[in-house]
Amino acid sequence: MTTTSDRPPARQVSQRVSQSVFDGSPLRVVLLVDVHDGAQQQFLDAYEQLCTHVADVPGHVSEQLCQSIENPSQWLITSEWESAPPFLAWVNSEDHVRAVRPLHGCVRDTRSLRFHIVRETEAGQRRQQASPRIGDGVTRHALTFTVKPGSEREVARILAGYAPPEPRVDDTTRLCRTSLFLHGNRVVRAIEVRGDLLAALRHVARQPQVRAVEEALNPHLEQHRDLDDPESARAFFTRAALPAVHHVAADEEDAEGERHALYYPARPGSGMRLAELLARQDEAAADDPRAPLLRSTIFQRGDVVVRLIDVRGDLTADPARVLGLPGTGQAAELTTLLDGHAGGDADLRRVLDLARMEPLTDRRAPRT
Image 1 (cartoon, helix red, strand yellow):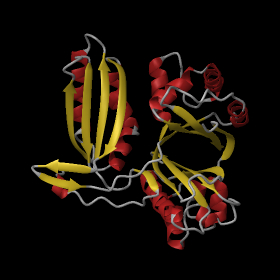
Image 2 (cartoon, one colour):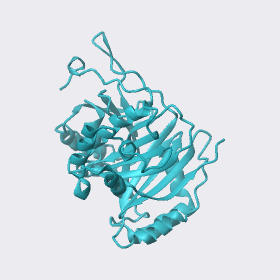
Image 3 (spheres, rainbow, N blue to C red):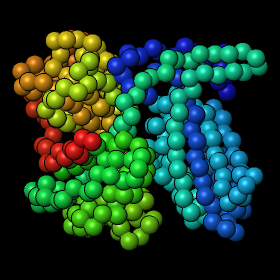
């Protein structure tokens, strides 16, 4: 087991980075669980199976189960990981989907929260892991899924024509922006939320026009889903989740730019490494006044890496900087990490053309 003294010092990140999983800090994961009445033993049995499984996952440090002293149906599972990347590699895997399936029949609701450990006291010794990041109050999340080949034009028509949901969720939560893109038969839907992400997702799912769009998409999806079946819907959206792993903004936070999405299919097992490479280069670009980059959010799950960028000027004028790779060394590393026909290509203009996603909608809520 890794102890506090064994851990390497966390990497200091630029103050322009408001979100990153790559700073090396240990991770605390908190899972709030509401168990069905009478299902406590079933829940405990499922938890023991999960513990046995996760103990062998690389990067896992410890696990703890707590029961509320006020409401016995409420439980708290906490786990510690050496850092965020090994946890994300596991939680976004099919192995994790199978491991947590026994929990679904005995829990009413769950909520997962992930925190970097910034300050820590152990045996009287106080340790500073990293400087806290200064956020902008916005949570970024994305979903990705594939549609049946040949249905891309119809899917694009469906997604481009829907009426946006009401941006106000409640007194503290608001939808800020929704952007949809298509690359081949892959759809990416990125959302920005000020407030509670889970509340916003539930709010969107309840909107009649959104439900109509989802139903219209069902016949075209490569992965079957039944939105009236909670287990089917849960499995689909679990696999579709595309977490944000890094966000950086240049000084001109309020500057308007043109929004683009770039898709980087990684070689098998290289997705996290590719996302970290792009994150490092985006940090440098945010400090470079010559760079066209205004904002960048990197989303990664397995070998799917998507970079959502706001840029000034023509996207193709400086493909190296737009791709986040100002140097030949970084460009060479990128091309070795890309899968398929983009890998190994030294022509960055061609790589940019291959990476660009087709924009379908980009809807911003009015500023208040």
